[in-house]
Length: 231
Image 1 (cartoon, rainbow, N blue to C red):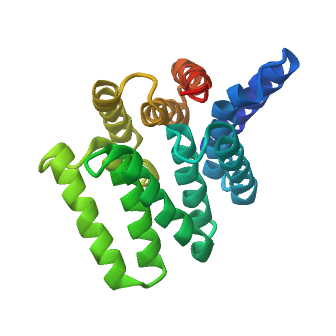
Image 2: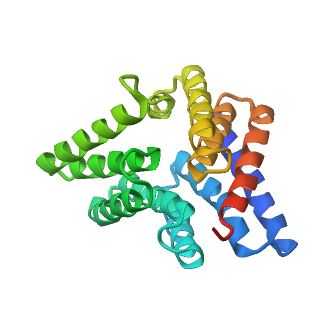
């Protein structure tokens, strides 16, 4: 049933993209919807298709918006995550390292996107068995998280783990909490907030609630369409 729900979500996303192209929506405005399609393909286990779409989205954002735009950094993170999921760790490592450098340069150390970049890079190093380097990055990550959130772990980090384990009710609660935090800290249209919006939609769809998920899909798409415009 979970797979069928993702098939339904993917078909809705494809139809939306086709309609947008048919009416001449600019390429930049399609990128947010295509990012959601790539994530759905990944959830379905279609990793090669997902990875190709994530790479394409990252390269197009980099060309359209520049390497340091928030939307480019988010898509860079998604591409590196896709490489990790596909077991292509040697390719993921330099992208993860560059992501940390660019995110820190843009946002500083005490920022949620910096924490995300460090978490991804630390996981990559650990999977490459570069344990001493991974430990250093993981300590840096912990310092950033403690500075940002205090002693309680951030909700979205816990929610992702629960989602993977199939604990969808608790994952939904924590994804919603993460959304509230990032709406307050970053604003409603920040790319990280919009990723949280999409996460709520995904978990609702996985729970068999496509009608409840639809407004979150729509909000995420519309928000990314605005976010990919010029700074």
